[in-house]
Image 1 (cartoon, rainbow, N blue to C red):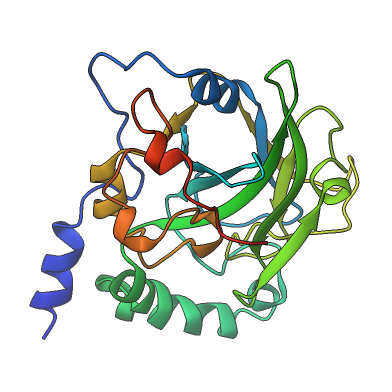
Image 2 (tube, rainbow, N blue to C red; image 1 turned 45 degrees about the horizontal axis):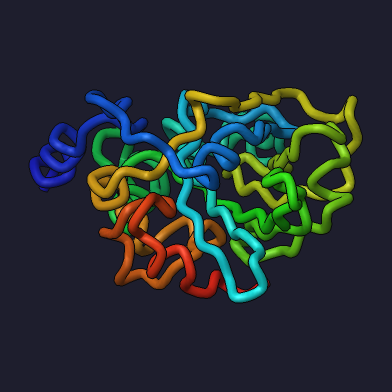
Length: 246
């Protein structure tokens, strides 16, 4: 009985995506603007899991000219240990870890079977485009701790840093729809800049089953997940598809 979960665990690969090698494409002006817009990911609580080195994205432009960018943040694991009541009371955290995370502490748990390896959290930011081609934050969407979506106003996204939109978690499970925090309330924060914000490769989308997780990051229908991650030269039909409504 243990052979199947152990085999699944040993063949599932790294819990964080590997950097893409090869010669990058020349970005369009919009891709360059998206990849040049620094984004920060943080947390108000200490939790398990290493945050990946790359923030992947997909984008779409709607009929009003607003640009929706869905970002994918990758964590190495999703475990209940940290600064939370589950850990303080020990047994609840152990029970969750025993079933949800690791399956009797040897094989993959419910989380891995249901959603895939690692932990992928998605969020979406809608930008307006100025006459100079610069992006301006308008609003966003992310998940709460109960996996319901929450709308993030411009003030929410810029409450930590007025220059760099910041999404953050208040939960051990890393959902990034936190609200109400100020600059001194985060215990961790990582900011991504040029070279660290990259179009989502199709193989990563398939490998991490992104057609069925990280819902707030989805800016195009699931059947288009095999398409290029961002509008490039010649991809105007994809760029002009309506983004998911907020």
